[in-house]
Length: 331
Length: 269
Image 1: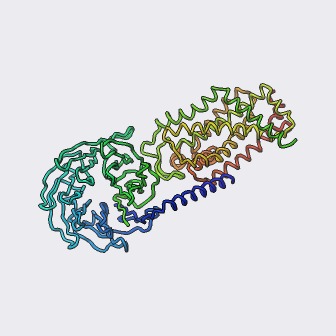
Image 2: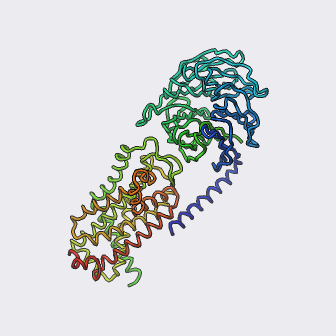
Image 3: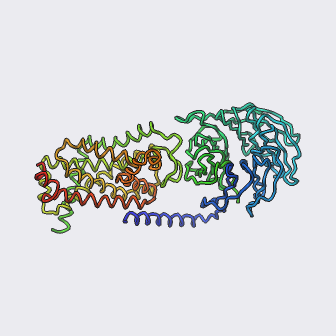
């Protein structure tokens, strides 16, 4: 068993050096948890961010998909699409403490900058519901294109962006007047949108077209449509959905659905740097608090892939619930 | 005889094997090109474009090239084991085997020396292959390159011992083609080298069991785990057991009094 001994000795040496390195850095690592919505088994999987062990699986309403963290980091808003409402999960007790109205089939939502308003996409009745979180009331309904889904709020809080899947448009909505001020035609079936931190651009992914449109928010013109070309992967399998922009504004990670890849895009010159192999049908992702790790939910392989966002390598994939969809990282 | 004499004999055998490997340029090149052809052409054509599912020691989805790399390292050792058996037959035909066998050292030591020489050559070949494979994005952790060494020694010894047993059966050089057909190919294809065993199990249960008892499967899995800093105790035990079995058979096979050579009337010399 000299091999076992050697491997053990090697591991021990490695462990000691890693521990010594960690002590030298003396960086207090913040503990955090990863929350994953599982749309088929109606649960939220709660994992420890460091060990990636499942801490708890919380039962919630039917078909949880879009999840958003409250501004104070204490609650998680969950679109339970088939239950036709939004549930509020208290992150301390991990229990659903409130239910908010949402109109039918809420799929995704965005929180206002002050954290008091939720803009909810109602897929079935082609509108955006404006929900006052404190009162738990819908205060306004904004008609948009058919099958709205992607929602994003600009960093200055003045614009809400909604993508409508069937109309293939990105609608810019004024948060004060609740009027659509501009609609931009993008690739077929746009599903997700995210603003850059300076608010100058918004990235919109199109699932069927398999593209990402980068739109100038001042002129409402498309700066560039990013196309993904993976040798050997059928074009139909390349379906852009979730997008995560790094805080330093340099890198974008685009989840390519059934292509089982996450594309790494240079956020400045909009060129594709690399494709990372993850699990089957990757939907959405979330960064760790230090931005060093990206977690992505794989809808068909029922797991979550962990990406080293600096080395641009997939390090691990861990099982979660059935059909994981959304991911949020929280304390 | 003292330890120095044993060492002199052993180093002589290893040096001879090393020289033979370097001088036979064709063998040198083909040993290197063979796994690379598999890696570059076969893996590209066979491509699991959407990734090979997670199975230990891998912790996430991997491209097919990454999966077959340890199997190709095993293939290098398998071919090398058989090639050294070929060289034994050659030695016997050319008469240099007699020089070795009449030396005052015990037979088991001479066979062990021959075996170690072959293993040393195969390990050098594997490391050259791994170095080239690095450029094909097959990049195990750096510690894996160290951890794989003892695994390579063990698997190399086992496959080399199998070669020794076979060489005691082979009467003439020409029969090596038979070894290719009846040993190398079946061993390689019914193993975990090309496909994960869970996939083989789904396709055919009988091939799955053939793969499970195939010593080459366990040699490959031992290498695969070690390359990713993990240890596969089942494969290690199976490889050790086969090594003991083959070594025993080789010592008997080369014993002129009772071995296969005796039955054939003293060998082919």
